[in-house]
Length: 395
Image (cartoon, rainbow, N blue to C red):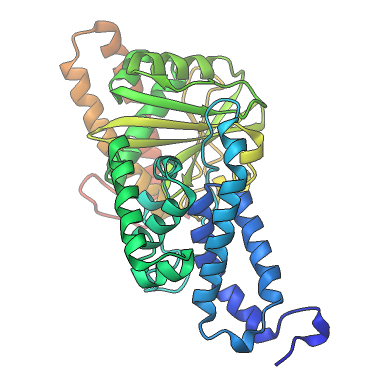
């Protein structure tokens, strides 16, 4: 059937494109590490799909994935020079708003695992050539067969096997990130936030790995570290210095690329998005995106959306740690209270173990403040007691 007046695809063809949008975005975002560039690729794919004789397409889903992958390869080749000449460290654009998860049970859909979308994973993929990246992702993240991948990238099956092996070797040489348990991740993030807010360098050293690396991406448009900051002491002082310069910092927890991260507002303006990577019980990498061109998907709505955020604000506006603009339902409050209870247990162990009087007193003050917050959360969450017995939530 022909397209109506040549203005728009047939309704069935348009429906096919929309059904595959989640999968196509998943391919494009992983390939490019940029929400904006991924959306541009999808727009280009839509225009090309518009001009196709759909009656001659046997497998629309495979056709669209092939189209998007090839457009991404072309895009990566085109932006290579721009990224290598980038001012400072180039980081992937954070994905704060979760995309459509796609059809349940579809291995190539957007039902993502956190470690497959993490900034650490996407940053690692920058070591690969465009074709290596396509072959690796289609096999690793979307479970395509070598025959399917060969058709998509225009190579033989054997070539694709060799390309994948080469890509895996290259990634292994640089140390492929291994994601931590989500609870451990959130606990370390909470401790990191509190210590940073309080200017507690020693507290930060307790959560940072000795070889931690902090990457900061300002794109030459806002002040940022032009080179990675390495080592626990340097990273701790770097972060404390950043926060101390803000007259009013507002840290809000949000889901960033599948893991809990932070969107930061300074003087009422969106300033940065931060994500951590945890390994072996310590923060191994810190990714700080301040380039305003990469903050378009991290607005206020995303910090309070049901996409996984707790929308908790920890404001540095006075001497106390205040919980403001709390947007939690009872169940989320109970979950957050449980996370704080676990953190307090570790905190009390540190109070006992430390030999530093000043550090012990700082920990005790932090413990007192967090205990009050936890009790408030438990009351709001329905009075969840230490033993897990729930009572009716207050109205």
